[in-house]
Image 1 (cartoon, rainbow, N blue to C red):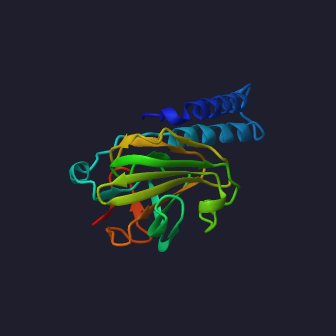
Image 2: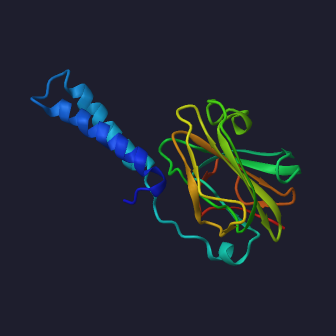
Image 3: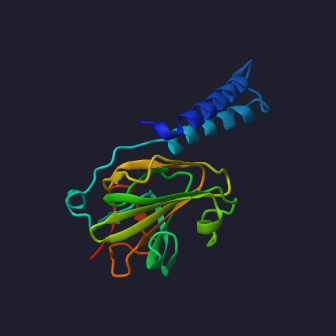
Length: 220
């Protein structure tokens, strides 16, 4: 199992704590009290490998040759598809699709589209739960604006209440290919993507997505 390069530091810390707790639990002998650190250590060990895993993904061929295709930027469940004003990059009405990630989802993020990065902004933010309606604006987040041949697209990495840590390797001037890795959100997260109003959506609320594989929409 591959561990993402974006979370190696956190992964090693959690693994170290887990090993210490497991050691306390098995030495000198297992008792009712020593089983507590043993159990916690095993849970942390499993969590570290689950949360920081970075599985291979197969990018749909049609998305690689046609920048009208929009892929899921994150693993998770679609919780909202709504029309609203996007004032930072698109600067007009757009359709926002939001994906909520549970702690068991892969948290490595991928570019949903191919195009040129024209806008990037980072906001330190607050600690609202990631599924809160205001978390998109108030929590720590990054905003990435990309121009495609079909129009402007903006997507946001948003972290939640447990911790605040976003890794984003994107810079203004970069050229992105749909499905390529762009960073990671740590410990409870949400991903928003803003698309043109005439976009044809291929998913609905409640659907589960796989980053870099699920086709969520086609722009006209």
